[in-house]
Image (tube, rainbow, N blue to C red; front, side, top):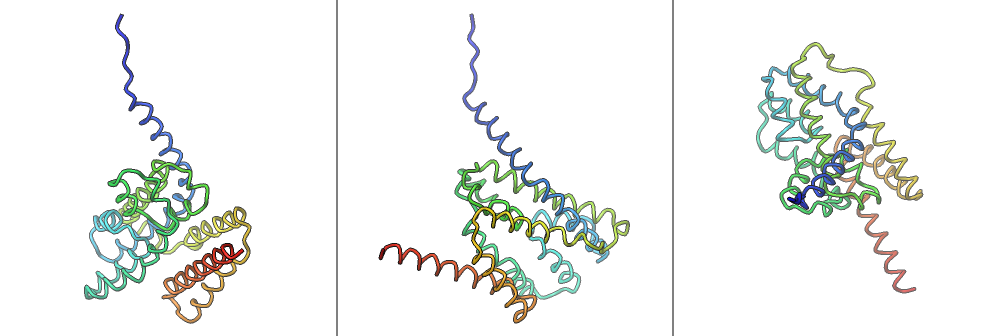
Length: 242
């Protein structure tokens, strides 16, 4: 009688698939909210006179959200490469701060870790920026990220193919992502129950929105993180003295 041999890799692969699908379920509602912005980018590319394949190329290779909207205008205007590089640095510098809390260590494979770093976006960071995410597997985290990446490429491609059929600006849809982050902020408060932290974030945002205008993201996040680090060091110093 011949015994059946079951590869030990099979249960592992099945577990990874379940974890990846769990990540997809977590990210899907936010991914739906992200779709109108992707389609708006496609419409902008279509109306700018660029070829249709620019949309999937931009979204798949650059994958930088708001930066892509700026780059469309800069490419049409034939902006200098130095201006493009500086704009990219200023707009995407916030990703430096994301690395402080994104659970990249949960992803064991070096290749997949590089992929995760490449497709990291605001929404994926927001969904993993709470303590519970520290227990998630790398497969679940990559499942979350893949939803936003695939959705962004597909929605922008639909937008550029639809062209003039989709209005360039639909009132209210641009608030979907803002509402998404507001809900995540409320959930974060329910977990931590810390009033000073959201007040500090709001103060930094309002202050630099007034004095720095459209360039407020970098200084606001920089000051916010600096104050948090100083507060953490102060509490550690007091604990050691006590």
